[in-house]
Image (cartoon, one colour):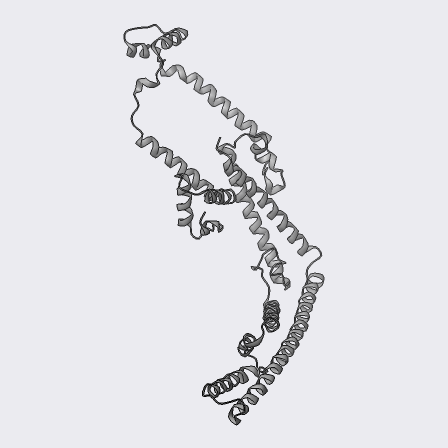
Amino acid sequence: MKEEDSQPLVPVTDEVMEARIVAWVLGEASAFEIAELERLCAEQPELELFRRRMLALQGLLAEAIAPDVDAAAWKLPAAKRCVVEEAFGVEETGHPERAATRRRKPAWQWLGAGAGIAASVSFAWVAWRLSTPEGGDLLVGEPLSVSVPSAIESGMPPSAAERAELARMIRSQEDKVEERRRVLSNIVREKQIIYRGDESVFGNAGADDGSAGRVADAQAKLRQQKIELESQIKSLLKYDSEQLMTYASGLDLPENSIKILYPQYLETRMELDAAKSKGLPESDPQVAHLEAKAQGMKKDLDQGVVNLRDVLRARMEMADAQLAQVESLKMEKQTEAVQTVIPPQGYEDAKRDFENDLEELAALKKKAAEYHAMPPA
């Protein structure tokens, strides 16, 4: 297998993914691609639906271009056909068209059977409506097994009616979750609760007031500054020799003297190398002067690296202290809003209702994914 086939299959665009699925249906995909596509189709129902459509299209194309088969090839032999006709009481005649005409019943004879079937269907529908409570779905806490027949547990493929009912329930539950989200968002906005980020059920889309936003922005900046300082300190400890000096001279800090000394040190080294290339001995006054100057500048650079590490550590400690102060302020503001401004249990009840409805919606979508994975009834 090529090296690029060992990488996981990432759907860049819909066109690329559809092309890979078509290649899979046509038998042009590798074993690795087939495994990755099967995983993606299991995770994303829309991809599985597209694959089934391509399989159906392939079957239709195969039937369209298939050679015509003799109509007599699929008929029963004459002897067996006579036995079947005798069992159904059909007289053998020399005119099959006339016999078929005699076997065809008048249209009015089917009206009674059709009326009986329609009456049975109507009675079954009325009985089902009477046995189902009003609003009997997940919106009032009804179990999933009551509203949607458990086709997966029984091992039977779900029917079109079951799929449509499940889709309707998902839409209703999504509307309910959106309503719960709006209620909780209004409470957060009115009571000035900082409830945004990884701790929030809204992700990064939570609402807060102006002061809460400033506190959260300050907290994010301090965390980013702390990450940068940690990276700079680790780099100063990891590098050595010329690589260390090159990295240190690139740090844009007011206390960084290396960014001025290092270019001067390189210029002195170039002058020393040029003097030696002319054949001047080590005892030459010019060579000795340049050598002493370069050694002194090297010591200053080493001391500058040490000082730079101390400065970064001091900034790190200051960032930790500021971050702790901001987090304490954030916690105090949130606690004050919850305990003194919000009515008892108002915020907690709204949050709990939102999370419960969100879990029910996830359960419905999981069942829908299982339905999509099963063949239609």
